[in-house]
Length: 151
Image (tube, rainbow, N blue to C red):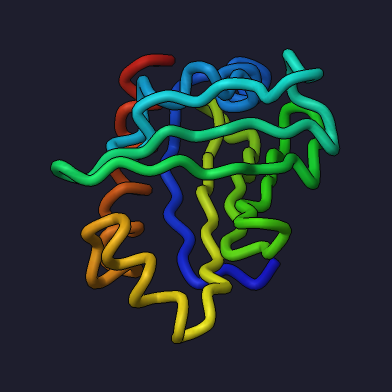
């Protein structure tokens, strides 16, 4: 993945604690300002490469869902997933976790793969005109909330 964005934050919790929280996608609504909840799709109930889940998102009065598939898992270190729309990967997201003396550094990554013609449809659906600025702010808030929940 070649991220368009990456945001890091030191968290005073072990890599194992942070990893466990992140891969429990049913908790994503606790920290993400955009994803209000997420649920495992049929046939899955925990993180594994190939597992799929649905994220339920909100921005103001706009609501939409996103299908995602886990593409990389490294215990206590990496959690990456692709967001799909009818088989087309339009975004990649992930988290890297590195141990520090006081806990770990968590980095959230995002890569936007939408072609220009899809960006107008996406803007209409989500109400987000500047996805890069919106995502950066959301990533900062997500890591801040994650730290508050785990420290």
